Length: 387
Figure 1 (tube, rainbow, N blue to C red):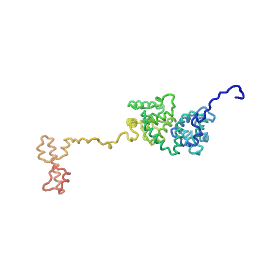
Figure 2 (spheres, rainbow, N blue to C red):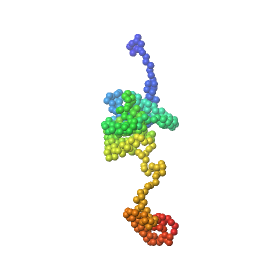
Figure 3 (cartoon, one colour):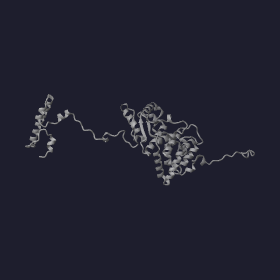
Figure 4 (cartoon, rainbow, N blue to C red):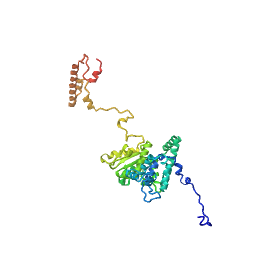
C-alpha cells in the first residue's frame, strides 16, 4: 500500500498480542492433555458442536465432523460416531484421548482446531471452564490440588441454593410437566424452568449448568421416549449424573411419565414412576418428600420399627369383659354370691368348670399338696411357686 500511495499516510492501529486478545492460545496449553478437560466443559462442547452447521468453513464442516477430521479420524469413523446414538462430540473426545499420543491430544490442539473451524463462539462459551481445568491440572501436578479442593468445598458450603429444583424436560412433554409444576409450586416449592425463568441475552448453556450445580438443590429429570431422543436433554442428563457422582450428593430425581428404557448411570438410581394410576399417589408423595429431604437421607419417611416414642406410652386399658372371661375367680362361692344376672351366672359356671379341670390336671401330674393352691391361681403362678 505504501508503494502504491506513497504520499498518503497510513493509520497505524495498535496490534494486540494473541494472548491479550483471547487469553487462551494454543501455545499456552500445549502441555495440557485432553484428559484434563472436565465434565462441565465437555458438556458445553457437546451441546454446541453436536448441532449440525449448514455453512461450511475453510476446513470443511464447522461442527463435530470437522473436529473429527482435524483430529485424524477417517470419514468411515465419522459415520460410525454418528450411528452410535450418543453424543458424537463426547464420544470423539473420549476416543481422541485413548487412541492418540499425549503430545497430539492436548487442549492446545483443541483450541487450534476450534480456531480452524472458526467456532469462536464455542471458545467464548468454554473459556472460563478451560481456564479452571488448566489451572487445576497444573496445580495438581505441583501437589496443590488438595488445597484447591478444600477451598472449593468451603466456597460451595457457603453458597446457598435459591431454587428447590431444576426441571429438565423436553417440549413434547410440556402438558404433563405443567401439571407437575403446578402441583409442586402450589405446595410452596421454588422451581426453575429454563424456558420460563431464564432471561434473554445470557449465555444459555453455561448458565444452565451453573444453575444445576450451584443454585438448585435438586434436579428433576422428566423421562419419556421423547426426552431420550433429544440430544440437548441427554447432555443435561449426563451433566447432572456426573455432579451426582462427583459431589456424592443426591441431586438427581428421575421421574418417569411414560414407559421407556433408561441407560447410563440413571439405571442405578431409584426412580419415581407416574405411569401407573394405581400407585401414582405414592409417586407424588415420593417426589414431594425427595425434594424436601436432606442430601444424606435414604428413606421417604422413617420405618415404623425405627420410631421410638419420646415419652413412656400410656398403660394398656383392657376392657372389663375380657378380664371377666379370661381371669378365673379366686373363690367360686364368692363369685356365685356376686352374680345377680343371668350373664354373670354364666360366667360363674364357666369359672367353676375351669377350676375343676385344673384340679384334675393337678392330680394327674402329682402336683396336689395338702395345702394346695386355690383354684383361682393360674397355671404360670402354680409353676412359679416352690414345692
